[in-house]
Length: 154
Image 1 (cartoon, one colour):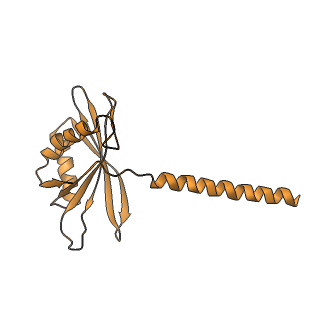
Image 2 (cartoon, helix red, strand yellow):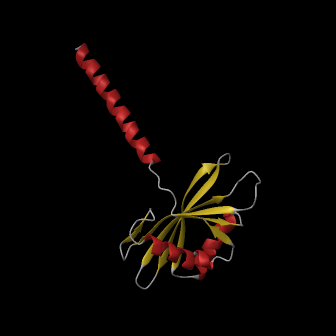
Image 3 (cartoon, helix red, strand yellow):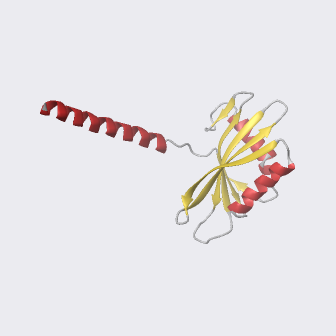
């Protein structure tokens, strides 16, 4: 009887440890951004610029999807931008945040996390994925190129 109890407890401990290791590995499996852009405006102003772009262009839809961080560690904001064309539907996934360096400037950073064309079945989270370089160019031209604020890419 004691043997069965010990085997059961050991099995539960092993399964629990393996489950935690599995979930921890999934959380840390994050891709680097496809490209980074710096803006000389705050993240709030950048968000307003993106939503104004969507208001002015009926083929562009912006939707805030998540916020992470805290007051102490600063917030990061996630947004999906959908651009509908005559022969494409492109989804851009971005992250933007204030660039809180030591000098506390009013700058922000935008990271292009993923790009997907759901009609032509191209895109991904890595620059080497099929069609990603072309979709990055479209993002820079059709989205960032229409934002009046100055940006630099890296």
